[in-house]
Length: 137
Image (cartoon, rainbow, N blue to C red; front, side):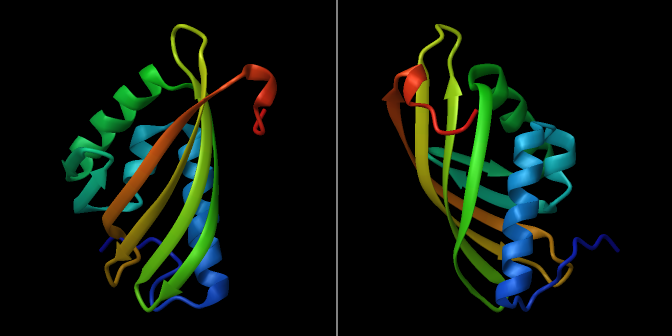
């Protein structure tokens, strides 16, 4: 049986660990590595997209980083309880036209008993920025 430690129920310390692990994984920009943190039947809402299962997660992430170049993410624990974690995040990227953006958002996560994320609901807004205004380099 696959397990992704730490397992729920979460403490403040283990919730922060989960958030940092997610930040590190997403900054790797490796869709396969990232997808292994999610249950095989994971359910996502990302902006206006609905994604189901690891294969769709991998395809989504592959497409994402073909469009969002020089991606850099920072996540912060917002709240936790039992098998759920809420985070706020910011990330920066540029598009193929060398225009820079910062995205702000919130995510709600729900984990199964094996520590795999079974639900991820993300609300995200993008703001155009100047390259000189970047926070994450």
